[in-house]
Length: 110
Length: 116
Image (tube, rainbow over all chains, first blue to last red; front, side, top):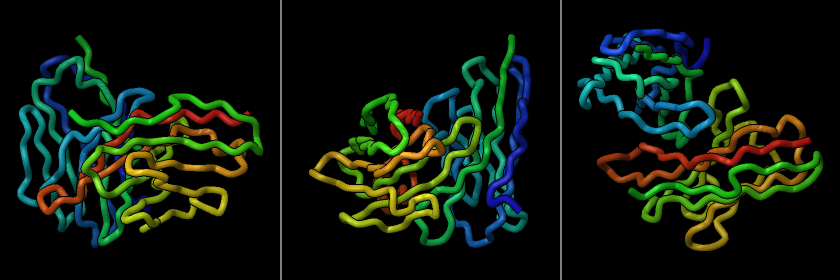
């Protein structure tokens, strides 16, 4: 089983739509969770950390379900500029490394 | 807003040659990292560095790789004898590791390494 698993997509949605991405992780000792955004041939950019209580930042909402080892990202009112690959990222235990999923590609269209 | 910077943006080298990739982490950050991303694949961890020593490394980070913080600002990745399969984008990252944001890592724009 992959350490971090995501549906690669692509998700093609019209502007204004709501879209949700899911991610599962295999190591129950994982402690910290993030969503990063990566544009084509660019660096990963931190979108948001994911907290146990769930958190919201503008149009973006992240949820964590530790029992199911599942993380989600909801984007409301999609914009053309949201088109990118969304990376689910996990940090496990005392390890300093981040483990990345392969990413879910989002394409927002007119 | 402070950023991680990396040089060069693109490095082309012949197989067997040594390359040094350079990074300037965010100035008040204490933890430094190198990751790589082969084209079309996921981002993979190489090494983390804290307090002037390696704190963790992956299986990819073999004897051909080394890291150094030669002064108070630069953080370098050296590949001693490059192979074709080292062709990838190499990202440097740094983190502040404060109690409020312990794990958030910020990435530089990357160096694209092409080994011919």
